[in-house]
Amino acid sequence: MAAGNLVQGALFTVMVVRAASLREPAFEHELAQQIGRSPRFFQNAPVVLDLRGVENLTEAAEFDSIKHTLRELTLTLVGVQNAQPAQLEAAAAAGLASFAPTAGGGQARSSAAAPPAPKTRIVTEPVRSGTQIYARGSDLVVTAAVSPGAELVADGNIHVYGALRGRALAGANGDATARIFCTRLDAELVSIAGRYLISEQLPAGVQSTPVQIALVDDQLTITRN
Amino acid sequence: MLAKVIVVTSGKGGVGKTTTSAALAAGLALRGHKTVVIDFDVGLRNLDLVMGCERRVVFDFINVINGDANLNQALIKDKRHDNLFIFPTSQTRDKNALKREGVERVMEELKQQFEYIICDSPAGIEHGAITALYFADSAIIVTNPEVSSVRDSDRIIGILASKSRRAERNESAVEVHLLLTRYDPGRVAKGEMLAVDDVKEILSIPLLGVIPESESVLRASNTGTPVVFDEDSPAGRAYVDAVARFLGEQREMRFVKPERRSFFRALFGRA
Image (tube, rainbow over all chains, first blue to last red; front, side, top):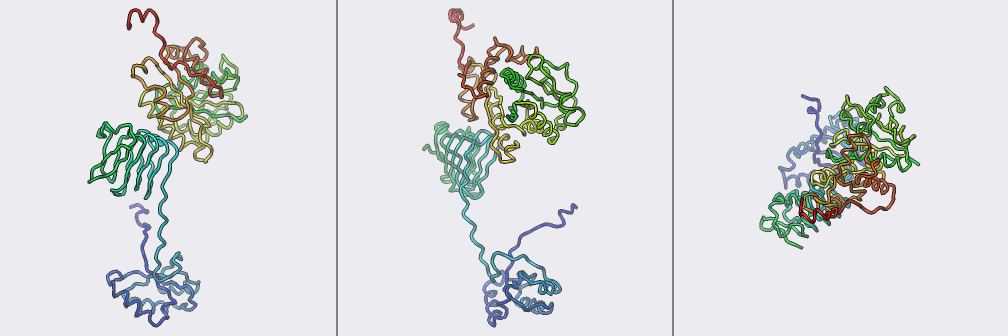
């Protein structure tokens, strides 16, 4: 077995508990209530303790005690973040890992900021044979010709202001409402959400004309613009 | 003036890259520019034949890349024109001998001596063709008026835009010119060949010239004389025009309309 297979990277969602909030008398009660609402979600869930603003907790025994408290709430403490050197040492002695600080600022439940809406991808040069362009999560606009042997793929709509002579696949992640627009249809293949037509299946009346293509009742429908 | 590197390329084989490289180099030399033409088709050496210097090859491009010979030992001076030099390649090696660092060093050295460096590319889109186009400032896309050649040209234009050194360094793009060769207006009129405008529309790059299909091209390559030296040949004159356009002159496109049928052929019908 290659060494590369022995160690692999992976991303997990881990809850973060602020150490400062542990001192609040209602903490245990409130957390227990929250866990009670969705017990399966919290079953053996990994937890990281955020030490921001906390000065004590420099003894391994203190971490052991917090571990125990969380264990009773079905949570497993796996590490700490924002630790000072002395705290880090104690945490390590208690068998805890060190996590990099997160953007969430150590809130008990940080809601991830919504990613910015993907911007339409615009291509102004001719798309040459052998080139593939993928607009991930967005529309694709091409303001030049698309050559035979070129491929346009978009999770959204595809607009070609020029001759479409290659392939165009809109709604590539399954969006059946995606459409293809072009000012001249000479495509090798057009596809929306996996439904496709090859050039010889294109009706004669729409060849070399400006069209839009949509899925209607699960059928690719081409209409002249 | 800084030397300009021009690649003559096409993707497809047999469309006239070597003929064009020879004609272009000779044409630029005739216009007073010191020019060298390099054969990048390692293992299928042809440029020396077309230039008529095959018996004068001692050292080659690969010898210079490997440091076995210096540049001036390998460069062959053309007997017809003082401005024209041929840099032959090896027939016994393969394209892998084209090490990029070595080619770069040779290019830099050539730039000190020449105004124009013409790179005659091998067919294909593999290492040899990529190395030939990598250092280009300007590209001449040799295309025949047929669909497979047009598609391969389109592919190579895309590669120039993504894999050349100018593209890698985000410098201004390689200047691309279309040269349509083996054009037969009569067959175009009959619908057997793509017309100039069809090819221009599909490739959407500026047209440098149209070279008519001509017996003189075969004769020129068999005798080892670049076709621009044949002033009676339509292809030779078309190349002279293309060189002039490359140097920025305006010239009307010739040889794109069918020749008028002669009186006798009109009289006796189709031959």
